[in-house]
Amino acid sequence: MMESAAAVFEQGVDPSQIDHVLVREPAEVHAFPGGDNTGPFENMYEAQDSTQFLVAAGLLGRPLTSLATMRNFNDPEVLELAQRISSVGEEGRYATGTAVATIEVTLRDGSTIVSERDNPAAHAPSIATMSAKVRELADRTWSAERIEKVIGLIVGDPQTPITELSSALQGV
Image (cartoon, rainbow, N blue to C red; front, side, top):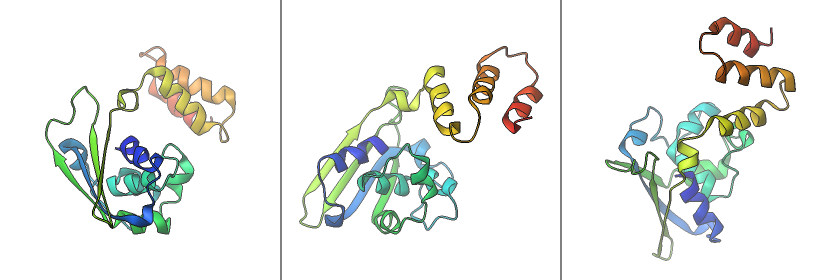
């Protein structure tokens, strides 16, 4: 859904001209606790679970893979636009093992823009892409050695005691 919203932004749509938005998403995504939530949000975790927050942020051109976007869960522009977004869950939207969502944006002049993007890599990531994501997210917080140790423990020998991973995550 984030890709579909970002695609509308990339078309140059002025967010102030958006009257309302309908998100047609997989029933499984819609049923996720906190998924259908227009806010306000108490923390970034509520925001990242919210269809409305993610779509509003995408329509406003916020970087959707940025931790800064999620930490700014009380962004007034995102919250205002989220109030105009509704979502419905539909069966059969896991077409290729990925969550396909359709965004229907109705502008104040009555015209409608429909966007649907399928991004299988976002929904079925590889170990390499997830390792890269850990490196990106932990870059300023953990040493490179610690990052690689955590990744190595996750993808390494499945018989390794979980206490080793817990210690590495805690920096012990």
